[in-house]
Image (cartoon, rainbow, N blue to C red; front, side):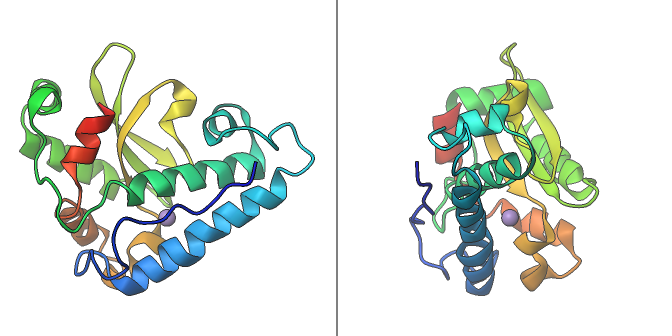
Length: 191
Ligand code: MN
């Protein structure tokens, strides 16, 4: 199975000033594409040649896991973002966020703190656990919550390549601006 880079439903400059066209050009056009290319090269002649990304995330190790998870993670991340987002969760997800975190504002604060405090490269996730509760989790490098049986709802990429061109070392500024382009309609659809 040949994996493909997904099309983005917005233009490269659409998320500016939160994420610049230059960052999309590199992060999506170069990094995301490289994970797709690497994965397609690595799976040839292995048990994962015809596997879905979800199977690769749950079962693979090493380079196949790293590149497969990064393809999935980046597609999930980029497709959560929008130039015209729904700015707050409502309905069942909105209620669950208030129940598990106190309020939407408290959730955002906890998510930002978890993202700022993640050492090195990785991802912060909002996930649903098997008990039906929401959790914020951190994963290093290509880590993905599907491997632990958790359901991903939202991801923030905190690898430097996600923000360095726009924010340099100011990761907290990237995290704070991130909320301006998260489309909660997309996140609600995953809940
Ligand atoms: Mn990235």
